Image (cartoon, rainbow, N blue to C red; front, side, top):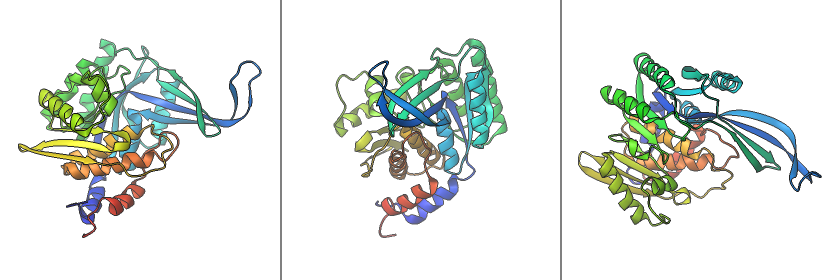
Length: 342
């Protein structure tokens, strides 16, 4: 890719190491029941899954933390879970994966979001969600804000990620307060939005909706399929919200990024790489993780988009939500992104 050298990519991966990243948002447990299907139930016309294995994995904003750690950086996850058994399981998973729970609040007013996926013969048969999506109570907001202040004081945060899953942690008050804290400390903020709080994010460094979120957030009727229409929507929203850069993930069509640096507009549409897609779950978490570290290191929008696009595609080759493999990402970046002349 023009003007991206092998040395740039190798240096970037080295610079990822040790960067401290604050991740704020909705967390959950991704619970998997893996099994075999060889008969139909006599009770109802449904398959019977004979369970062979159970897995509990970190999900939602916690999967972003896993990706940040996989890239060599240090995630500091801030969220609210229930004061329940699943909440204890969640912090146990953090400990197991070597992620601090210093930013986690256990609230007796909430339950811990858990998504149960039943997999039979390597195909998802059913998903059952156990969750609470109402906004945090004022008392829980206060506890979380105090914890956020503590994290900003005790860690050298390079970038803040707001990961919204519409489960109630990112209330308007929390969003406004954390944006204020980050601005005061001159720390860039990167946002992966959902429809509910779409217009709440102003004066941020990078905004990363997918096509569905862009369409819903801007209340656009019909499909957004043409790059020029996507570009016009981005220009409008970027101007209205005073956003420095927007990157829209376009599924199989890759990503589109528009960045304004010192008055200069930089735009790129990066096509997706051909993949054997197994599961798209968690791809957005990987994209925002790579993009946030790139923004923290003031990487060019071209390299930011190209590397994020590559990483998002890589994790789609695996069944289930998995963090990116740093070594494989580096290898493919050198093969597919670096200028062949370097």
